[in-house]
Image 1 (tube, rainbow, N blue to C red):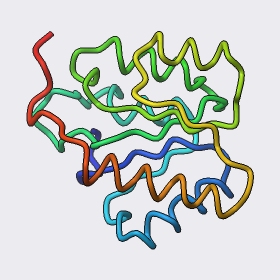
Image 2 (tube, rainbow, N blue to C red; image 1 turned 90 degrees about the horizontal axis):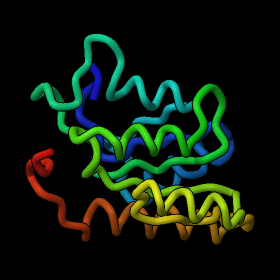
Image 3 (cartoon, rainbow, N blue to C red; image 1 turned 180 degrees about the vertical axis):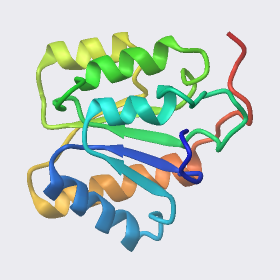
Length: 152
């Protein structure tokens, strides 16, 4: 990632209320020590591809997971996903789409681009916090990742 210290979760979310709720939930689960929140797709891509950064430069390791909204300003979530999965340096980073879209075309496009999971944000407060807590626990504590990304 860029010059920031190592993060475990990159949260890409433009809705401040959803982001704050997710951050609070992850904190409650003691999973927020290394969460980085960005508010649009361009900022998410800059974490990996901004001038002067190199996803494979030996700098801070990539996050363990990216929680990605689809409906983002500047660069759409599907475009962020497309770019991440097209680059061998970032392809192995798990991406979980966490969005309000139930559109079948979004689900199909996301899986076609290589998303690891597609979650529709629950509307109810308690269901949303439960979903975020379960996602954090699974991707940070249970999921096994390779130490080094696969060769291109």
